[in-house]
Structure formats: C-alpha cells, structure tokens
Image (tube, rainbow, N blue to C red; front, side):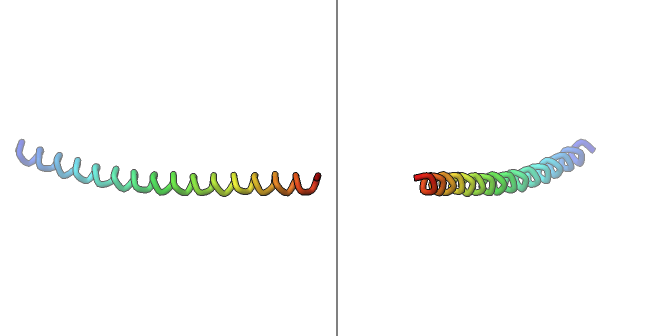
Length: 57
C-alpha cells in the first residue's frame, strides 16, 4: 500500500513538473513577445520625435 502511494505520488510530481515546465516555456515566449512590442513602441516614439523635429525646424 505504501509503495503504491509513493509510486502514485512520484507520478503526480512528475506530471506536475512537466506542466510547470510547459508553463515556464509559455511565460518565456510571452516575455519575448512583450520585449519585441516594447522595442517597436520605442522605435515608434523615436520616429515620431524625429518627425516632430523635422516639422518644426
């Protein structure tokens, strides 16, 4: 009985570990997407600032 319980616990922990690794991978992808969006927004701000300077000077 104890051996069976331990085996089930080990399987459950292994499954939970796999799920957490998948979640970690998804979060890393999310982070990279957010960094890309931030870069695009920064470039957009720079372009708008350059346009404003060209317009006023």
